Amino acid sequence: MSSRDESLLERLKRPEYTGENRCVPCTVLNVAIAGVLTLVAAVLGPISALAVFTASMVSIYYRGYLIPGTPEFTQRYLPEPVLAAFGKTPDGPRDGWEGGEPTVVTEETAVGDDEAPGSTGESERSAAGDDEGADAGTDDDEYEFQTVERIENRRENAVDPVSFLLDVGVVEETDGPEQLAFEPAFADRVAETVADIDRDAVDRETLAAMFGVEPDEVTFEGRSYPAITVRRRIRKWPGDAAFLSDVASHLALADRTDRWLDVPSAQRLSILQSLRSFHETCPACGGELVSTADTVESCCLAHEVVAIRCDDCGEHVLELDPKEVSRDAESTGITP
Image: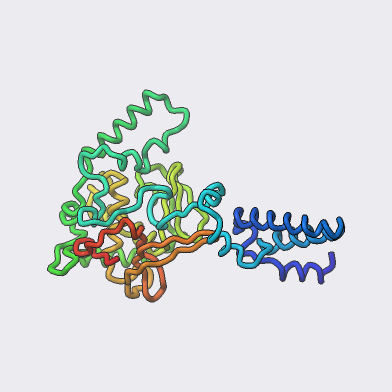
């Protein structure tokens, strides 16, 4: 192949739609269209059909699509069952466990009370250290004992989040509409930690302690936003500001009180997530935080989220499903 031909093919390439970014539903749709065009061209003869088929395949291979605007077309017209067959179901907010229950912000859950003391409900079974993390070869009796032991541990160590955070000096009561705010020294410590680290500097050991697992049970996911696999579940954050805020708050809490690591992991994670709503400025750049209804888009899909984001750098500090957000913002500090 001549250098001129290679140059032409290079100009044809669309890396945003090919390689690891190739969308399977879009590709299948375009191949089907190419098949129809080939059949139509076959009326003129086999050479015409071969030419149309070859040109179509080259376009799909190098450009990712045959018909311009395919992603928008697929998103608008392909039914959800078809997209679901290719794993293209809407994810909802990029905040929390992938495929898990959405975070509900209400007066009771403002600082992470998703696992009430004494509860043996679904939240206990969905923590990072639950059923999905058990080795396949574990004996049934031993596994059952481990599960019961974990539930008992949660019963003994679950906290009332508001009381706990007030007791250890993380938040303090205010006369304002939010009722609670970061204690200044704690807020400064979190801000300093976020400023001193970046996403790539956070190691497995830190995350393992945060999630209550072993370091070799944490795997980093190669996504455009922060995401890790904890045992066999994926935890995700809407951006670096959210991720680093959780890590910094975890480190500050661990230094402030020995009680922090005794709090059940599911409750710790929910507390960390909700503490993000107490930031007065962006953890990443110090810009003003605003609450907006945003659309998060990927190929074939778009979903609405209520987001706390930075008005300067655009980082999302918190993302919530708008259907699950309480309209009462007095206790949460979040205005949908």
